[in-house]
Image (tube, rainbow, N blue to C red; front, top):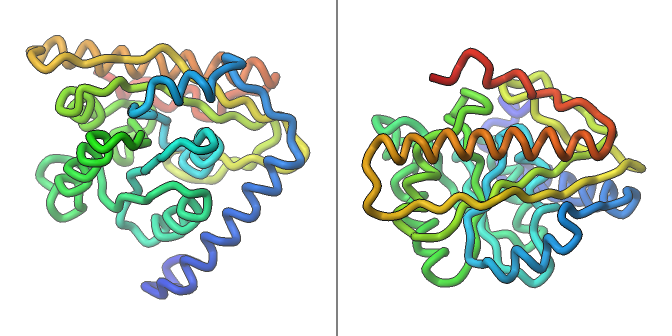
Length: 240
């Protein structure tokens, strides 16, 4: 469907408004649990921070934003990113269009500009959100988010947004979206901090630590709703 729409920005933005309305419907009809219970206040006190999610939860990003907390999110320049950007804007989240792709694709996909924008928002006191995965390689954290934390000197906070009732898309990341009349768990893990003067081996250790903390957080959140994480095995065999 999106290919047929091509570059019709008006239509894509309209679909984003529909998505935002649907997400609000899911939230108001569902029971919401924060893990820990004071998670919104903890995020406010730690702001500005870097919220990290696995890519399969990009549609659920708006649920992670505490009220009255300024937030920006990195969204790809792909046409379906226009839908996500429109939906996020409707929740008061500023979209930053770019990609955390391979270094040789950084300029073409807007990765370098996206990184600069993320650093600028953080320096101005706005928290940012980005998916941690290597593009098209689900559940494997890329170096981009570690680089952002090192340059900005802001903590990375793992985030998971889980719905007991959800639809699973046939996509590389097994993306999910919550269904109405469900149980939502919005959870945060232990932060990852990155010092400026670390060597390559130390940075790699922190990248793997972030992977582990995101995986454990998803496992914990899905256990709370009595469901199974559809992406639990995606990183298996892809990690070095």
